Image 1 (cartoon, one colour):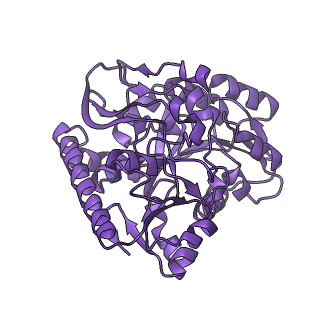
Image 2 (spheres, rainbow, N blue to C red):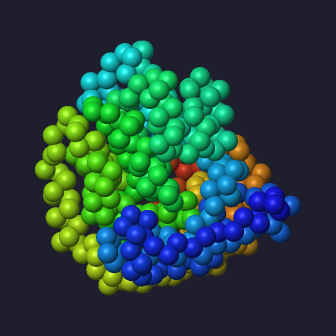
Image 3 (cartoon, rainbow, N blue to C red):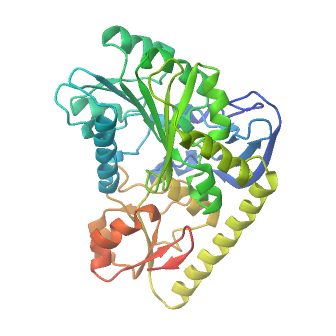
Length: 417
């Protein structure tokens, strides 16, 4: 552990997409540990924090972090398992089904999931004879391999792309769900796509959408792993440099971190017609004020207001003598816990179904994580719902709610349900 902490974070001086030095900071969430670095009590003294500040590039309008925590620190002890969420499992099964139908996949076609985690999306492809491949740099790759998938245990780039094409052939579908925004050297990542896609392959990104982030004050998806906050305006010229084009785009109400966009990309020599959705979104972003720094500064003020409102509700619960716990321990929850200043005195413990996280503490705030069964045994009257994007799912399915518990939902608008 000590040796790993000697790896220093770097500070970029230029924009990841266009290389401009015109970067303006509009939000600071303080110094925080990496959001997925759940910690055992004996390791607290080694915990390291890094600035969590957000910048707008005033040349291409990419919103990004410039403080980069080394990938070794984030991915070495990576504890995020996609399949621990039933709602997400359902979401990815539907995505695979839709892609199979829309792009008329057939037996023998190659599908690749970059950042395949434990194989959740690959598992969603049920067409017999598909060649299902994953790329995953973290130790979670072992779970996907054990499930029977062929996984390239590396970061994606030209080299891994050439290796896949040499062994198999070009891919019909390549996905990167909640991955594209995580890559610091995104140019090296994108450089691998033209080879892998060939003339009829399609690359699909799914990620939180910048406009939702700002309009709905969803600041908890800001953490060190998420280096960029995606919109179409900076993406189109960036992809164009690599001979790639966006041919369709859609907004989806549900994703791994809340509402998302799905961006469909191909080589410029590809066979898909470019849809009107692309121009419409570019026009909408321009009208919205994608390059207007004032828009972003107002967002920072709105976050402060949400913080005050949530803490008022917490105080009310405490004064009534009721107990407050937390529900769900996603990475994004840690941005909220740390920025709001939550401590174990304020939240007793947090219920989490991912067994790997149980028995550990949340990074920074050091709140104990317990199983759902243990949480129900303690039965706090209220639970801060950190996985607020799954609210509907939990209201229907959660044992805690069935037994009379109440959720304090922090975002988009603080409320008790």
